[in-house]
Image 1 (cartoon, rainbow, N blue to C red):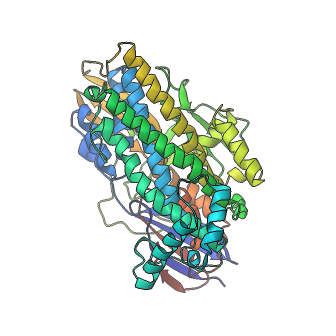
Image 2: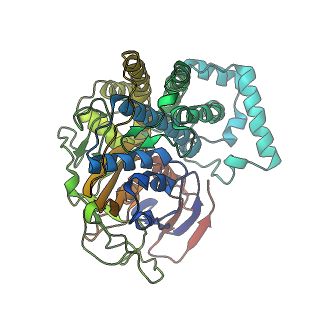
Image 3: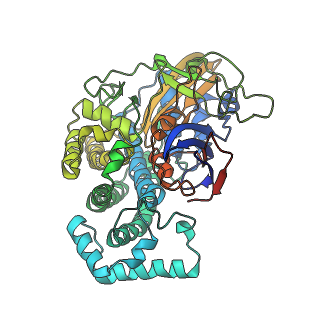
Length: 549
């Protein structure tokens, strides 16, 4: 007979999410994902000026602000049939690339690493051996026995004070942690270094966006930062980009490979079957042909068959969501009609989430770094495929290990390396274009009486689409389908699980009172909703409640 467990809340994510898991024989046998927060911004947008939409939608989140703004202006660009200037395309790509660098660094070190790294174990490390280990795997600017001794002393002060701050309430000492003390100390030191760096990387948005969060330079028709296109501003952007990329290549990637070498078994845990990527970073006016990250969909893990995405095949199902009943609808026809009564949480047969259930051609699809890297790998991408092959060789694991929690975490780092290099090329392309005399950043336009537009983007967390329907020059309908809705939706009318519900099946649970393994897979999706995890035993009424970070 199994056990029933409740973990509430999980932090190191954004928003409010509940995951309920059923276990038998030490493994997850079923799972339910429930979004606990109603968004409703689509309802606020009705009747407003389409040009103002991006100011509203980027308030959906305090982290993913730029990504919703760019998705919105692209949707309205499309509805107004506006072709933006080259400089605007390059600056939008540069700001978006900066978002990737910042987001992925923060996710790996500050949101996900502590699922694999035992902070308390680091107190037992030998600083001299840690320095030798770091020298052998990492090219970090800082190191040496004295440095690691000082980091260890800071951690010790935290622990002895009883005020662990960001390290509180974790499962330290859990049997699923496998790193030796020296590797734990090295990773903790780099956690602190990444904390310093991410503040500088965030400044990239301020250079051409005015501030971060909620950059202000995006507008329908281009960008408004023409006055910032000076040698000093561009040089500062390039300098911080190179500084961040040096850390990515010399610390982030080596840390990922070092940690992954101790957790190769997670190359067979946490996988899904279908993958969808809108792609992003247009290199010319032609989309999707010129996208640096390619667009595509892979079904049933068939890397030899990458089909083009047809956005007309996207629907949202509300059968198991807290909305008025209705058939699956394309976002252009989408409705946001929350239930009038208080929602009842009924995961077994009824409704259990505020999230709708996006489907592509009727199928559940994972989106995000793994989907993008798999699509790029399947298409033989000139930069990403060699990086994937090198990582697989170094870890001595097959390509099938990509379909996993480990693969999802590795894919995030691999695309960061590729985008960081490309970001520097886009910056120099901007310099050359300005030198040629082209300083245009905005294309004037006339607002049509009516029109429809879509902005398909691939943002750090995954495929993000905004759809706008304009009538009488006002927003008649606005819908957006976000990455965490794709990955963390409830079941649909066909009872198909969402990607995270599918990924959790088979996850081993060493200690039901400390379900660290569940956190690893849930965090690997980088959820943008705060979450609570519930592990349920169908044969028992026993319930554990555990606080975790």
